Image (tube, rainbow, N blue to C red; front, side, top):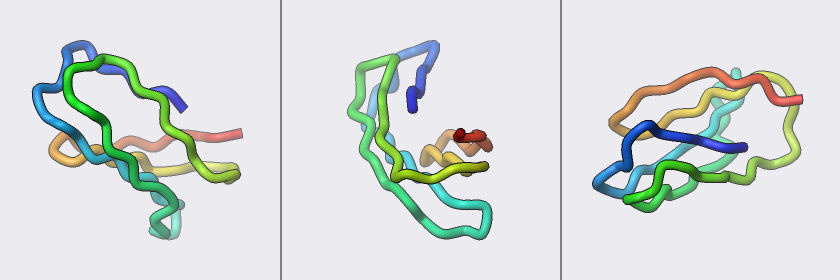
Length: 63
């Protein structure tokens, strides 16, 4: 899965992925000073909540 920002973060960010029932399935550190990241998620399907500390969260549908 790819994550992109318009501006480069000035500090490291922690990205967490949760299933819809709240189970944490992945935690990844996104190093500062890049606008594009690729994270590996376990073999899951359906909707996942992606949370980036200090920035909020969004829902993503995985196929």
